[in-house]
Length: 140
Image (tube, rainbow, N blue to C red; front, side, top):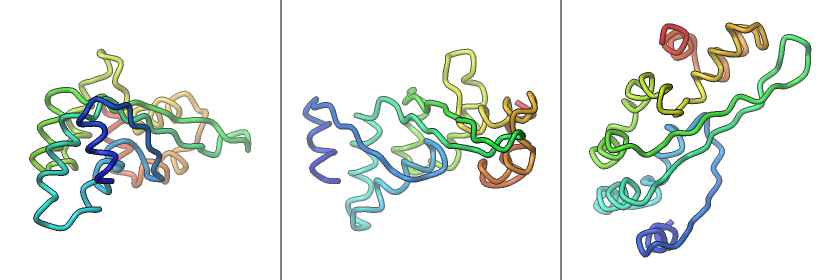
């Protein structure tokens, strides 16, 4: 992880994959690779060099198949500040306003698919990591 952050800091393109539920959840493990004393440094670099996290999930459809729910988490100035300040869990609240900028969280994609009847509410709740997360996306 240190090599990846250092390379990104020197303007090298770094691509990585992680197995998490959405872009917001992908930020947290990056800092956890470091000791407590270095996590602030890691969050600072990550906030500075991150461009976008593109999340995608395959969710069971109402027809017994799987549909793709996807959405980018773009590193806006507000997102960047939340990463640096270790307030990553609050990013999803910021992003509910981001649809007009083309920034759609995975939870918003799941809410759209549930509204359109492509997936069941239960499948959307499971993929969104709980009913309250899906409810926030449905309300937004």
